[in-house]
Amino acid sequence: GVGMGMTAPVSITAFPAEDGSLQQKVKVSLRIPSQFQDNPPRPSDDSIKIEERQEMTIYSTQFGGYAKEADYVNYAAKLKSALGTEAVYRKDFYFCNGYDPPMKPYGRRNEVWFVKE
Image (cartoon, rainbow, N blue to C red; front, side, top):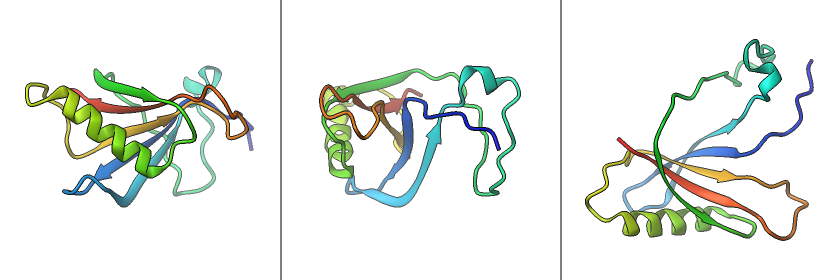
């Protein structure tokens, strides 16, 4: 019953298959605005969960445009290549983040995050 408006980024947890494509299982996360974080409203839909993300260190790459699944997969592959074999990070998932509303045509910001182990 409480409207909170949209926050950024919209973060999708992607679970890559062996070939780098994304599995159908994804988790979409929205940031709860600061004024609600100490006591967030309870969701009325049981499929919506409130989770607290632990502090993390990430490896990140940024790109523009209207991001599609193929773009996130492509930039995840580029980030993996750039990191080489020395960097240690979670391989079972990564985050796909979008920062802009759909009606923003230019200067869009998207990111892929790998979580450092």
